[in-house]
Image (cartoon, rainbow, N blue to C red; front, side, top):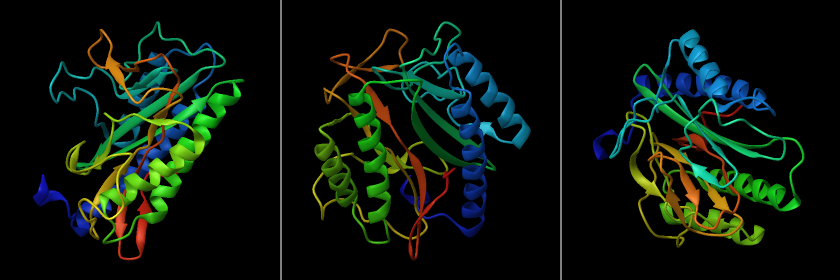
Length: 255
């Protein structure tokens, strides 16, 4: 994976297009996330949109060390942290926190992005979770530039989490992305400034703060994919794919 970290001009052009497609589709998926809608319906929407844009789903049939992921998008609700499988019987309710995590492959270049949506009226602690998880992503993006270290990013995210009294999910990290869904470097949502791999111009990374209102830990549900908080607390995820540029960071999946 190390040899692929710096992208060529052609690869950067394609990953920009991949990011634009992802943002367009994820925005539609977010708009469709309403009470009474099943997670499967959102997955079907994403499948149709991918075909329309001449792209493919980066997550469909992804299988690092388990059965292939069976859907185009991960939909995780409330205490489901990540990797939730969209099914017909997973129906969105008012008051839910719904995480949409989506990956697009366009001309061989992959982007990855996520958003967590408050459906209807949610409690104040859920609003705080969303506010500070989103704020952590924004703060991390602000520090990214050539030469910044992975520990600088993790430390930045961790400080925002602490300010919001929310807990980093230790097992879930940001990562390089581009030719594969997961590339080097690994970018934890905690850490010590001034340590770790240096980011370089031309690298593409997925920054993804993931937090809960309680635990740092989770477990894999019986479906073999869905990762759930150990204590049943609410969880949230926000993620963008970032290109490291000479001047700093370009968000490829903004919408």
